[in-house]
Amino acid sequence: MKKVVLFALVAISLMAAPYKIGQSVMPLDLEDQFGKRSTLKLMPKTLIMAFEKGTGATVNEYLALQGKEYLKKNNAVFVADISQMPNFITQAFALPKMRKYPHTVLLIRDEEQGLNFPLQEEKITVMKFRGNFLTKIDFISTADELKKAIEQ
Image (tube, rainbow, N blue to C red; front, top):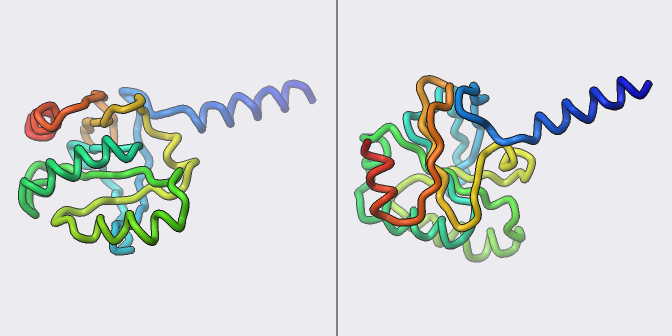
């Protein structure tokens, strides 16, 4: 019985661990800021992730200046983890603001799903993929670093 419990605990801890380089990433099924469902069966070349208000603002300000097709042209997708945001704040303030952006913001609303992705406090996570395999993870802070990460 102890072995079964130990195995279950190890399995659960592995499921909650963030993706690592070389690992295959499961398809993502997320809604954008308009409630439109998007399924990423094949990961883009670049996945940009923000887990905090400040990092999200940096990404959104940069992307808003780049034009509507910038992410598509660079085979990139932006995902914001808003799972920690109270629903009232999300509905009353965050979503109306996001709907003004010319670019798409895919949203993680489920805390468990957000735990699958690597993060560092006050950093933007940039993940590079070949197919669905994670090849590189960078943690960046500035718009200049973001531009370089997207366009390389």
